[in-house]
Amino acid sequence: MKQFFGMSQQGDLSQALSGLYSPQFIMLMSNEKQFEDHVQELEKRFPGVPSIGCIGMSYQTKVVERGVGIIAFSDGVAAAANLLEHASTMPVRHIRRLEEDLKRIGGSGKDVICLDFCSGNDACVLTTINASLRRKGISLVGGTGDQGRVSANGRVCQDGVAYALVRNLGGRVKAYKENIYRQMGNYQFIASQTDRANYILGSLNGRPAKQVYQEILHVTDEEILTRTFQNPFGKLNGDDVCIVSIKEVKGNALACFRQVNDSDVLSLLELGDYRATVKETIAQIRKDFPRRSAIFSVNCLFRYKLFSEHGYMSDYLRDMAALGSHAGLVGYGEHYNDRFVNQSMTCVVFE
Image (cartoon, rainbow, N blue to C red; front, top):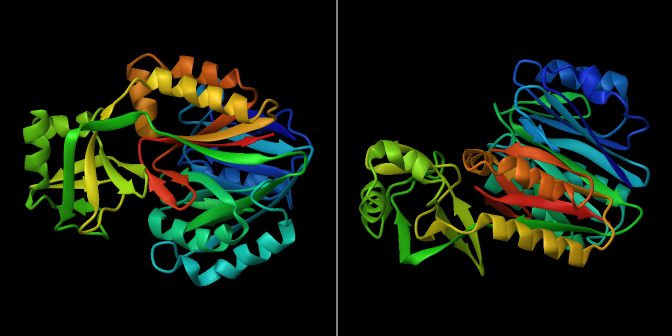
């Protein structure tokens, strides 16, 4: 298979599509003002070609912040794309669409990946989708777009998830998740007084969440929002840790970017040697896939900001490009199978 990346910093879709011929699957990442026009224009240019889209930044060797980016697969790919509406209330309502696409695409977890762009309520959406995917051992990689809008096959949805099943007809696929944080000390908490609908974390071990965070890290209210880059929470999920970013201060509580429930076990994390972690990920991919045709990744907005502030973003994209054809989305939350995480990188590698 082959992966195409086209972009326009000015939002010129024709420029971004220049050089793209006979695509078998397309991903659109556009800006807020032009998104719906780009969705319609893309469908006119490539009618019937499976596509998904969202509002967000894209990248290859450079980041497209306010324009438009196109990632397309061709030459040995089978794909199906669709929408599951009502993400905030009942994403299971149209799950039959996914079940039918799974039958049509065929294959298994060895050569099929599910890619998704979501408008919100990610944890519930992922649980719903993975109920169908896990029966065939198919992995999922995706992320949250901006402004609550996604698209599939020329249709825009304000409350849903756009998914695509992509089968590599020439080899294997495998999903990865990268965590650049580690446990800080022995801090461990039981969450309580949570508001699931608004992602509010009220108390840690029975004390106000804001107060606990401030006492450990010696930060002011204003500093909490940037300190989450270095010290997010970690939610234990079996033997894995899902990162939970802090969004804002709500009185004595903390609003987060992902849901925390009463009785969840949380830890406090600290930033590790991210350059070394990236090298380890690259080395593992090289080991697993001596021959690589494409890599699609989703990097968190907070990772993008952190890497940019440390002057590492260009180096990061250059290092990933050394693996081969690499492109991706800057997301507002990352998806890995049934897990919704923050401040992480998830990716799929195609043999």
